[in-house]
Length: 345
Length: 173
Image (cartoon, rainbow over all chains, first blue to last red; front, side, top):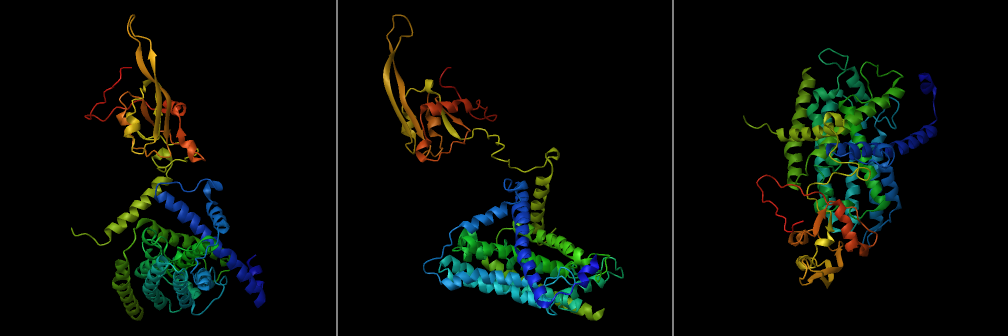
């Protein structure tokens, strides 16, 4: 059966259309899955609640109902808003999310664009969301929005650095920026000569893994790094003036980005689509790859959301101090240690 | 032993994870959520829950104390005097007050319970019922027949904690 996949040689335009359709289906689905599983269910359980119960079996369709509700709502634009910027901002944020999915490999061939600079591209486009956040804050013509956007800008820039630096350790160890190459480097590696599990970089780069997760948390503006949208002081930060479908776009982008970042973390540190014991060039990965990657993503997402549901919010100065005084120096030391060990062995 | 930095953070993660495990465990193992499926299952009311105020009309003497003490002025009382037959033969007929109107406007009530406290004749009681929302705000004005209906839901008097001041019944029943 597997040779059916390999014997197909679609033309460029055909494969492009297939990729577009798949991305258009996959991206909202991932946001839905994360929203239902973690935001509704796991969060409820951690607060000793059952979560939504009424919509669908065990309340699993609640988010669809909420989505339908958002679509019905009135699309409000403030009188003094910069209308073009206001309308474009959610799309910029969503675009950054969609571009993240472009390089995320679900198996050796199941990737939209197998770029040689894959991880570099992913980190670059993830920063685009800062522009969307600043546009939303500016375009809303609202003090709270502007404050939230400026906080968001400061935070996203501050945490972009530790994220990049945490990835550098992995890149040094793998010797490539290509995400498939990084997966294969982990698959072909060995732990002290034992190659059964390969060498998931979480073992050697666990410092990088934790820094990466902390930075992801901040990039997603989730608690404990949710100063930009702090409900109790800024109402909703840069999202204050958004309603209906535009707010839904922000929501979708946030959760789809969480999924994509979890996917990148799984690829960099947990071996991505590779399953121990199955040769990475095997045809089984046409089916096995997405499944394995999905499981790993859910594990990483659980870590991300577990932290989200546990910790209270950082104060703004603590938030900046944490990035500049702790994460970045530790990440630099991690790079240094990785580089020395790479040369030594 | 000096504190390990980040120990509290790990402990916090443990708390949320433990809570999740506890919620997911079946009831038979001492698990389950702290909440109930509300519209289908009703929670047991807490002792002395303040849900709605019930009126025991026979005890009311229309003394107006509740109405006067009410901070929101949400109790409306109208009454007339009448002569009741004498207790003993040859005695004078007794003058009593009969209620014409006893309304509590629950759209104004702030559930402070002062009326229940001040009532000298055990005519007002707290009931734990809370499901009496209405589509129109005017319907939240409960008249004396509605207030009397709540009497069925008033729980038996619950003993105070050991050592606390004992409640003395003001009216012999």
